Image 1: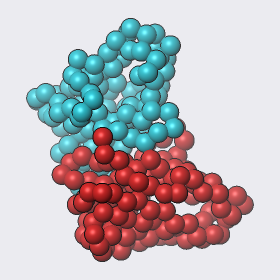
Image 2: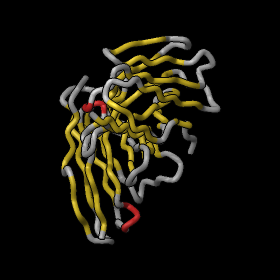
Image 3: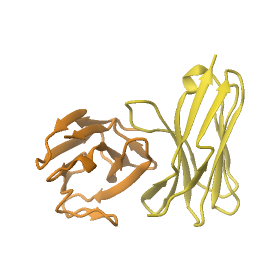
Image 4: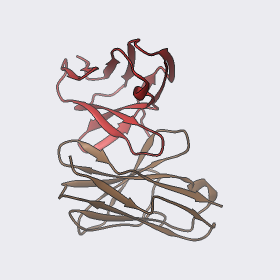
Length: 111
Length: 109
């Protein structure tokens, strides 16, 4: 399987600010996704990152809050906008060729 | 959103014991996957199951895709300390993965 890296690995942010998380895959993948994992919880799909077009968001997630880009087959960004403490979570990028595999996650704490 | 029912929530076992965990759903899935997540890491794929009734092994791990396509189990034989972590089942329909709530495994030596 391909290797996924994410930057930053962790951050502490002030409420009202925005953070952009980068996801890089070391080989081309057909699909890329963004998940959220709240403390002590399971993973919830935020959106599917579509190359060259708008992401497809799951119920409860909107583009204004979580804008996503995917300019090519190996790179995607997720922005967490106008953050509040409730946004404190692990944000995980995944890629899929056959099965989905995950990056190490970005641990976000919002004060 | 829809979630899978994964049990048990946690397990505390002795090294060398066998472990079993399972997931059930009210909906059918085309693929079942089992992941393990260590602290501070992303989930790592352990086993993927593609056909109803399929039984697949990966070393000491064995998983099965239920006949009804609504359930799956994972067995770990002869547990060792490095088996500690959180195990997640995930069902896939088209592209989206739906995760169970996880089973936290603790192994004492």
